[in-house]
Amino acid sequence: MPPKQDNVQKLLAAEEKRNKLIADAKGRKQQKVKQAKADAERDVTSFRDEKEREYTTFRDQQLSAAEAENAELARHTDTELTELRALTDERMAKVADKMANLIVSVKVE
Image (cartoon, rainbow, N blue to C red; front, side):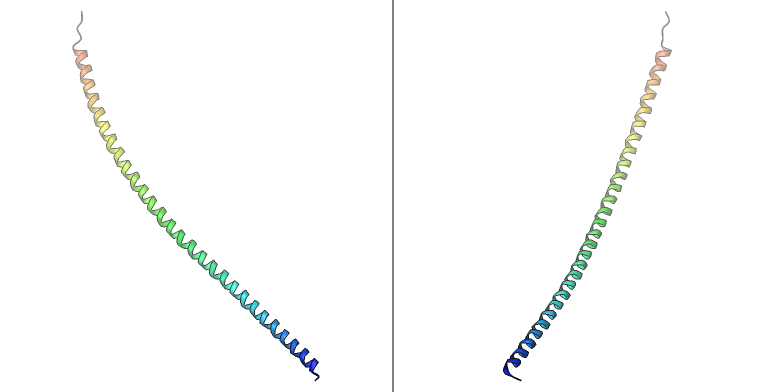
């Protein structure tokens, strides 16, 4: 082969080698991007699941605290109603006695 054609062949081989290296690099880059996306999606899913569990635990704690508070308020209300009924019964008895005394002690003139 003449020297010029040998150099052209070397240039073509070098260009082919360069194109192959670039294609391999692009393929590795695409693979890394796909892997990064998959890793990011897995991390996001994991984070979302963790926060959902935390939220559920917090909500359950709040609901149980609210239920306990409601039960305490119901007991307190029942106690106050019982006391008010007792006081009302006592006062009604006193009023009935006073009315009976007033009726019996009426002076006819």
